[in-house]
Image (cartoon, rainbow, N blue to C red; front, side, top):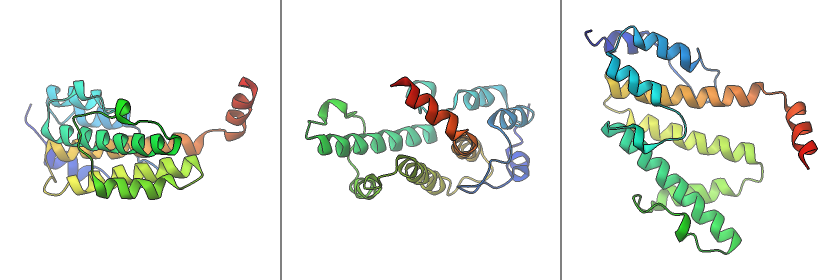
Length: 175
């Protein structure tokens, strides 16, 4: 099957952080399977927001996973500092410290509302994906970045559409 990335990417709607996803990730996978080779479809089907490094061999996915590891390392350092414990046992060694990211995360961690903190973290991820997309417009890498953005939007659609009263009642009943 020839690669129709140009046609596929130009036919996809643009994504903006905070908006509703134009379609589900499953629908996205179905659209892609019509236009891209099976090995590339298989890579897309493995994507999720757990950023599991064993699933990927593509260079751009390694960059995404390395960013996520740096992000989680900095979060671990901040949380360990608040509890006055040693963070070294929670830190993954394959990622180096990023001072800009650390500064941003310190600001984000000051937010007292957990949902707003999570949204700020996802906005940080989104901005990283935006920066990573430079130079990738009609290739498989652009499709991977689009897929991750769609997963982020789908996550927030689920959160926003959840019945919050029912969820609160479930949490309170567990105690």
